[in-house]
Structure formats: structure tokens, C-alpha cells
Amino acid sequence: MAREIMYRDALREAIDEEMGRDSSVFIIGEGIAERGGSYKVTEGLLEKYGSKRVRDTPIAEAGMIGVGVGAAIAGARPIVEILYVDFAMLGMDMLVNQAAKFRLMTGGDGRVPFVMRTQGGTGGGVAAQHSQSLEALFYHIPGLQVVMPSVPSDAKGLLKYALRQPDPVIFLEHKHLYMTKGLVPDGEHVIEFGKGDIKRPGKDVTIIAWSNMVPRALEAAAKLAEEGIDAEVFDPRTLVPLDREMILASVAKTNRAVIVQEAVRRGGVASDIASIIQEEAFYHLDAPIEIVAGLNIPVPFNLELEKASVPQVDDIIAAARRTLHAKPFALAAE
Image (cartoon, rainbow, N blue to C red; front, side):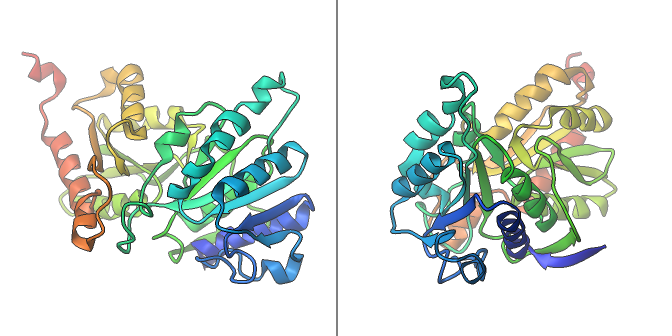
């Protein structure tokens, strides 16, 4: 059986269940205790688990991340909630030079079971310092696992799995997804990292998207279907580890690929996925790979400019059409 619940409630269920299962799990962050968090993910946890395990912090991201990494090294399982991913930059030394490296530097003896939950992306006109999609920064760092769920069931299952990991996890949520609804299975629900999910099967073109770009890709696929174009929508769910096999299998089936990311295009994850497809599935491609990404600019404050700076449904549709109308490589070379 399954229930329809909101994304934020699925996250809360995951935290609640893991705190009940493992007394070493605790959570710290700005306003996460008495106020229940800015997005109400942690509402009610203070009353259930007390102030030693659900603790408000000052506005001091470097301190929060440092405390979390240190506690993890000492044997606890901390969740550190950073209100905006933009502010995680204040703790990058602890994440990049300490948490990500500790296992290697101790010859495999030291582990860092640490989860940083944070949210990013555009929406609501909260301007350039509160709207970035920074997954590529963490994707680039060996030793960090990077998770970006798009639906409530994935949010719950992946967070529960994250809280059982011996190594650091960057868990990236999107501000527009918290109040979206979806079916979440009853009972124990855990999703292993590195297992992507086909959100919509299709045969004409593969659309690869994650986080808030998944609902836009699905909307684009529904509109393309009205034109007779059968698009497959693939959600990797975790960027590190990445389900390369499922990506390559999908592209081998459809012979075309469109990759959608909200983040700016330059140096993005989409470019790396494109290189994987080009290197390992080139002879399956009937058209050039299309990347639909944010503009290489700081996110504007103005709502209309903000919307124009990141991929919209029509942009995805246009990219899919281009792949269908492109000449096959063999013909283009003649």
C-alpha cells in the first residue's frame, strides 16, 4: 500500500524513522527545532526527541558543518540542515578537505557518516545569493555522495539510505518541491544510491533530468506525446554514484538524448553526462546530444528575468524537437 503525502512530509518521515531506529542520529540547523524549519520538514521532532537531538543553531554555517563533521568522525550520525545551498560555501573547507578526504587519509579506518541537507534552485524571486543550483561543486569532489530526489517516495527512500551510510552525503532538495505530492510506500522504504529511475518510458528520445527539472521534463514529454513524439524521462536520483548503465541503455533504445539541468551550463553535470554518452554510446546516437541549462549569469531578482534564466518546459520541448529533426550522423557526413 502507499499514501499520497507531500515531499516535505516524506523527508520528515525518513528523519523520524531513522532517529527512532538509531539513537546516534541527531539534527542541527537554523530554526529547525522550535520553529520546525523554514519548510516545516522538522516540525514535531523537537517534541518527540528533545533538545539534545534536535537543536537550533546560530546563523553560522561554518560552525554547523564543522560540528557535524567532527561529530560524525567521533561516531555520531549528524544531519546538518543548511537553509540555502548558497550558504554551504562557508563550510567548504570542512566538506572538501576534511569530510571527503578523511576515509582515505586514515587508510580506510576513519569514516564520516554525515548528511548535509540543504535546498537550492530558483523560485520566488529570492535573488542571486539564495537561488543557485550548485550540485556541480559537490559532484566534482571525490569522497562526497550527491543526492537530488524529485518526488516524495525518492526523497524518503534516499534520505533513509543516506542516514545509514558510513561516508558523507550531500542531500540537495529544491524549494519548489517541498509541497508537491506523490505516493510513498507504507512500511520500510529505502532506496539504494546509484539506482536511477525511468519516470516515463518512451522510444523516440531520452530526456535526462533531476530535481525540479523532472516535473518540467514530464510536462514536456506529455506535450510532445500530443505531437506523436514518445519521450522517455530518466531521473538519476543520485548524481554520485551515477547510474551510467541505465543512462546508456536508455540512449541505446531511443538513439537521442536531451539533458536538462537548472544549474548554469558552464562546468555542469549535464556536460559530464553528455561526455559519458558520447564516449560510451556514440554509435547509438542518431543526432547530437542536446543540453538545456541555466544561463551563465547570477540568478536575477526580477521574477520574469529569473524565469528566463533557467530551463522551462518549452525549452525542453524545443530541444527534443531538434534531436528528432536532426539529420542522422551518417547522412550528415555525406
